[in-house]
Amino acid sequence: MQQIVDFILELDKLKGVTRKVRPLGLDRYENSAEHSWQLALFAASLAHCAESVLDVDRVIGMLLVHDVGEIDAGDTMVYVEGGWEERKAAERAAVGRIFGMLPEPQGGRFLALWQEFEDAATPEARFAHAVDRAMPVLLNLANDGQSWRENGISHARVVARVGPAIETGCPALWRYLEARLDEENRKGWFGI
Image (cartoon, rainbow, N blue to C red; front, side):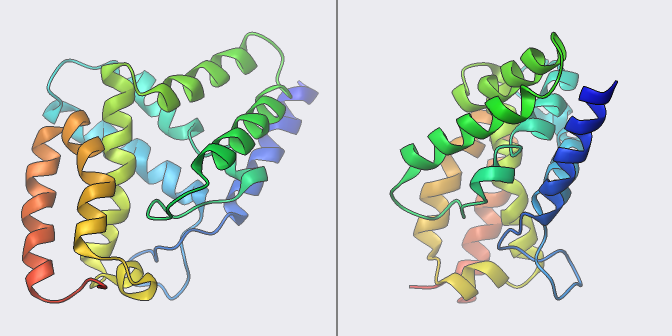
């Protein structure tokens, strides 16, 4: 029991990992724990739009663990270029430490879900990636391009960075977002 309690209290640190997107109507930035919670509900709501039947529980599990490594490694905006290998190695070390706090088989199960998400080789992992890439886009669309404007992110950079993962994991979601992104690009929401 103590190992589980220690693990859950360690996860509380994810609430302190700040991201670059603001929650709707708030002046602060969201944290990674909020992001993971919202993704889990988004995936559960969107699963019927997937190209194939999914194990939704596994998708939700992946989304709940996919950012746990940020407790040690911090969050990196998806549009940052370069250094991804080092960041992923730091996240891998972090999840090894954090999931290692749990007894087996729980720790191994969470680590396997994290790795499945990272590998993006299953339909569930590709769908989870689509949802993960789409949520900040949706928040930016609802917030007049807030983080794109603050960080000088171009329309082309958004499409190049998030489009392939969303289109691969949930083509219907990408069709919706692509049209919305094009519409907002005409309004000048993006950096150069």
